Length: 550
Image (cartoon, rainbow, N blue to C red):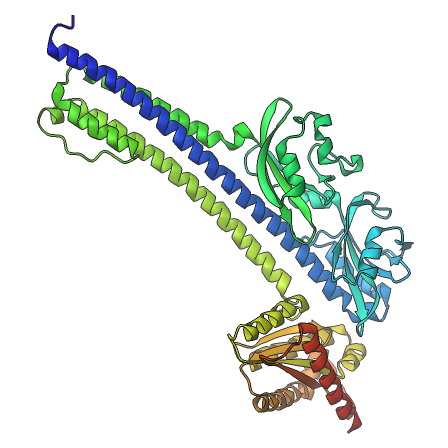
């Protein structure tokens, strides 16, 4: 049967062709699947990190909101009923997940929004915020007596003229916390869950916090015995791993949530999250078999002239490139053209599928980036005036200090501004007028200063302006012009009467004006941000005393 050299050559070619196509199909399938799995895991880690960052920014937004509420006049004056009415909009808002906001005095008495007075001296968060002089504190989960459900609390200190008078707390049900990220998914069958600093499960689709299940006890609930990812979850800030549950393999990616110290984990079924790789493997194998079938048919009709193009085709397949060699003579008139077209079609289909997957990953990443940007803006701006809040002011001051130390700028000045007689207008004509004055003056000051200067609301009727690259004599002239411009702005009788809808008589000693103190930071300065603020604040009060003495 194989007497002729040609038949023997065709048989040898056929054997070689089968081996080459089978090897290339297997190698290409395995390498593509491995790379795709690595890409999926890295993308899952990034999505988990971005989700944790969104949760962290949400916590920061809630902390910033409590800080703003803690500086309200009604709270500082201990008008609890009026303050509680103000806080209702934060517990009934879609933007916040507070279930309750309440004030705690130094004796541990808690004043709830419905008028109930309780005591929280048996709660660990009371001692953390009162005794440790913290800027904020996110509590461990606890069973709420008032809410009748598991909850966590966010607390900020309340200070009157720098003296601690208590704390403001916002309680959040664990159930509400769970709902805030229940749509966190990496695949069709995936879910997010959170553990606290001791490894106790706070939120999980299969466990309730009341059961106090620790992740180290998961083998008792059908999970594989001591999977490495559980140990990694306890000691590492982020990572990924696999474990078995109910006879199925799962993949988990996790990362630490800033501000709270918790860990966010996202769990997906291995088959679900790796489903794109199964599609690619199936497609590669199917196309490989089709290519092999075409090769078997062609070997009956081709001659030794086809050995050269097949060699080039093999080289293209190894390099994962399309076949671009021109066929001539007999090669062009045989089924070789079909073989080449089929290979290029397979290559194009794989590239198209990979491109679509990368595009989807890029789209999801961009959506998370935009959402994170919006949350960051909410966390850095004062809710009333729209300028920087106190938290962001500290960040800006420290950035300016670092710029001086690193010789990016030579010096900068900090102006501490207080609105004289603001309390008179606020108490006499109501908070709406007070808010309007704050908005108008802050907007005027923001437009008055240079584009490179920074302005923010420190609290109440106090503002801070940061001015880089300005000499002291220039600064003093600017302060004089700013004070005069604000007096001209607010001393319009028609302006106040239009706002109030009635005639008003303002005593001469109750006119709106500014008291401004300033402090300068140069390369030899050793000030901290608080030192600068304290120095400028002292000069501001000196100016205020001089005004009252006139």
